[in-house]
Image (tube, rainbow, N blue to C red):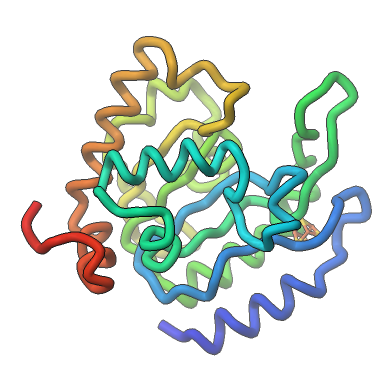
Length: 212
Ligand code: SF4
């Protein structure tokens, strides 16, 4: 793994202006050398102010899920998991309300950054969060019920890895608040908390004990 490669990639990301309709600034997580790669969708309107992904309401839910899964606080998760995303800029608001869904060319524009991160980190656990990230990592565009709650295997940018998919923690989504979503999410969080690579990264930080 190469931290220098990640730092160079972040410099390139920070200067990126490939998508004329995207609204800056570019948002990315810290250059954390981790075998756990989380892939979000795109920042919302607030993340740019904090210069970190999942810094607003959806993040509160996501870190509550991580606490439930692993017992680790937000800062420990941010120091032990590498946070990436399908797109790194805020897409703006959609005409009908909510955030605009990035277009396929915008997703393609940002994909080389994900490929570079996979090459630098060689993750052994990937956590796609939300349908857009699940489509990017697994190529799955069907029902969430088909992929959430399982440990899947995938070849992602040439890297063989386990995948634990999560629904998007946005307050606008009701999927995880109703059955079967509630039970599938609970199962996914159990799998995440028990996963040896997730536990190994947290143990390295001393954020959890060595016993499952
Ligand atoms: S979304 Fe990605 S490719 Fe598009 S401008 Fe932002 S960083 Fe560049």
